[in-house]
Image: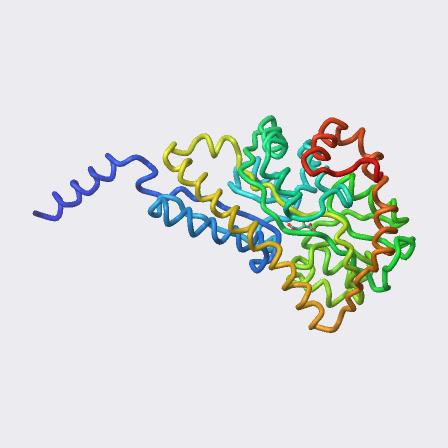
Amino acid sequence: MNIIRRITLATGLLLCLPAWAQEPIVIKFSHVVAVDTPKGKGAEYFKKLAEERTGGRVKVEVYPNSQLYKDKEELEALQLGAVQMLAPSLSKFGPLGVREFEVFDFPYLFDGYADLHKVTQGPVGKQLLQRLGSRGIVGLAYWDNGFKQMTANKPLRTPEDCRGLKFRIQSSKVLDAQIRALGGIPQVLAFSEVYQALQTGVVDGGENTASNIYTQKMHEVQKYLTVTDHGYIGYAVITSKKFWEGLPADIRTTLEQAMEDATDYVNELAKKENDDALSAIQTSSNTEIINLTPEQKRAWKKALLPVHRQMEGAIGKELIQSIYQETGFDPSKL
Ligand code: LMR
């Protein structure tokens, strides 16, 4: 076959193929945490499954550590189509106008991961994800991180110890109320700015999971960590409706299955990641770990539980009640 005929044939073949067969579909997955965290590992695992199972028709590019965008920017980028997938913490959906997710910020609402999964893997969780539809967003899954601990440069044994201190929070009204209930001063900062803010004293302390504290080296600039387990950090994995609905149906189904498997993977490893990170912080011996006595823990609960009632108007009584029902939380504790 002469060269001209060969080229003509090859070009003809290419033209016959649909666009997706020539170029892989690229999913840019942006997130703010380190690779070595539940979310970081989940994104990598999703990439592996998606690429393998679509035979390379989908390429997932993961951008960790706020490399591409910070908290608020990434949501804008998704809406503009600059990225296709994110997993923002449930505390960060307020700027999108979906405040209901902040119910997951309620202090001492969940007793552990099993309690949480009754919500995130049940009908209430599903309904919440569906609310994103009105914002042009598809909620694909919930991914766990874990329970939050308080850090500062002074020991926080009682809620009163927080009085007058500035604490970094995520952009959530519930978290704002929570810090105020402790007598602290809340300050919203993007995750990528926390280390420096702690180091330079812009804020005195913070609240985060051991996994986030350790992988961002926050413990190196905080002398004390109190194991309060007072709240939860988890994520909604999201994509834009326009992108998702524009995918060939078989690809979408394969990706849905990959997401389900990646979700199981993340939710199985999250607790261990946090336990290991807490041990690593302890071993680093820069930060003293404070374990609360049952009596001290009761004092933290007493100080923080009134936030539930206080946020009823903002979050919705019905939603709160439905979560109490799912988890068996006893509102008479309030
Ligand atoms: C934070 O901002 O502290 C967390 O939401 C970061 C994350 O994504 O886990």
